[in-house]
Image (cartoon, rainbow, N blue to C red; front, side):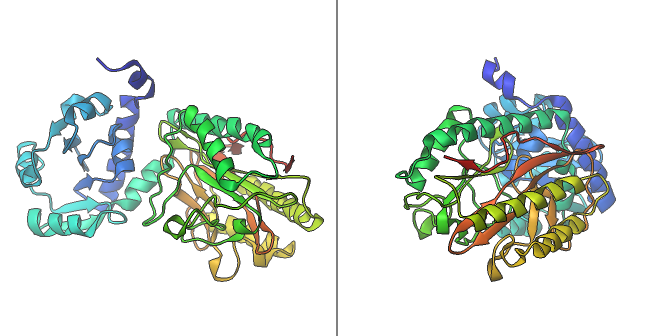
Length: 405
């Protein structure tokens, strides 16, 4: 019998088959006869479980999920349904199982070429299907996932409430003798008690992310290997980002950037705190950040090109006198001001340079205009928005003003 908690968290079958149907439409457009999916987030999105397996989705016909490990658990968790799930004894049996299911030897196979290990690609292309043509199914996957259903939006709203709950508690945690790590630990403990899994998925290669980034003072301006405007020192070069060993001091910005997570669905929110106030130049900078933030919000409408929103933000921040500090400095500047999110923190669409993707109703976007001052730190805000037919609906609910403790 399915556990009661699993009943509450299981993806509805109607969700799964709607996603597969939309994805199949994109496969037909790309001329892909059969898609093979392996990546965890994609498996969860299209089956309802992350148990290790090979998910085959033909452009026409029924899906087939061949589970490598934890078969019984996959059957229990997956909303795909037992009819479409079978155990996989070994890779050598793949072709035989597909043939028995009528999938035969496809002429074109789509793979997640943005994240599939090269060794697996070579095995599939050289050992199993040497005569097949392999195409990249990544865009078809990501554009399918970009449009959120009401069920998904409810989970994202839950993640936003989770982030709001812990953000409201930060003033009671923040004091002048607390270290970044201690503050981060208190924030993360609350979020874990609220059901956060303690991990946020990122699709980008070599990108890693915990629950969030707690950054204070000059270390908030430290760049890191991650594709973010500020990185933080971290605890060592082994993971050089996020909270570090420094003690938080009065009159410096404390950026609390957290990602809520409910049933794997994410939100992204940044709020700015300080102890005993900030210097006037940083208060002015935050006013500029808010102006640009609200300007972007007004432009999040169906039909808008992502690149045009980014260019407006860049031009406006330059006019306000902060162009050299916007989204990083020098070589360390990132070329976006917003990103989609769902079950990964870096989904379509990206509000970025040279990205002509058009916003559509049902997309969810995190907007994060931030200024970096090497001697002072990070000044910024971030909110999660749903694109509706009437414009942007803010899903993150924490007050947006600077919080002075």
